[in-house]
Length: 305
Image 1 (cartoon, one colour):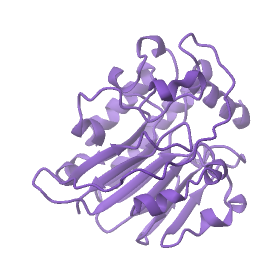
Image 2: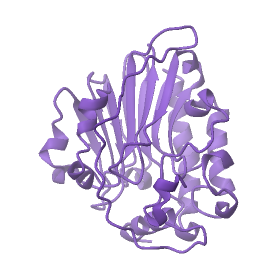
Image 3: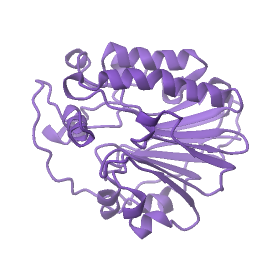
Image 4: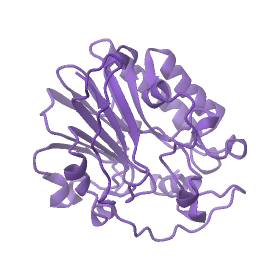
């Protein structure tokens, strides 16, 4: 299947109604809300206040996101690290304002196919090293992974392959999972890992509004859920569920159709996954549901180092 068609099917799959039909995506006009209070007194369990803030956001097209005042998040949240997924823009076509955000070092990887996939990483502190992909040509050509090394941890941001409409790319996803898991385990053997991004899976029934009607749809197949379970079993934790194991109706993605965001009929597809030994340093994982600019909302991780 050609990548351009796959991109369309990824988005259609997410935009399915409960009955499985696909409707047209209306124009998204809402911008980033400027009234939110981003302060936090979160601490570790032993009372140490956070001193590292990481923001992750699937922006569903960087250039469109910029027009919705997306860059204002840098000023409002003042994160130490910002990770963006599904940028859909090659580096040569990046708008200048996206390349040079004041106070941040920036890194980008894009798919060979223009307008598809892509991730970006911004950091106040210059990383020790930055690598792109994980050594697999097929997946790396789609621009899905950036790894940055810092003194106390590795930061990995990723846009995981979608299993596609009618699961046409589930095989690609099943090829991805063990390879990406190995990449994380190899890093974890050296330093603890913070991994974030759109993982394109709702792990448990609590992580989406309509689990019964989506068990054969991309993002909630048993194969995808099992892949995430395997990752966690190798020494990693879902930081949100570590803190809020039973908290319901906590979603990060809503289809544009059917007024789903207003009704909060969504999926939790975006995660911060941590090496288990980082749990004592975990302060909070926030889902910024009030912020628009994409069909996903941003998520924020607060840590103490």
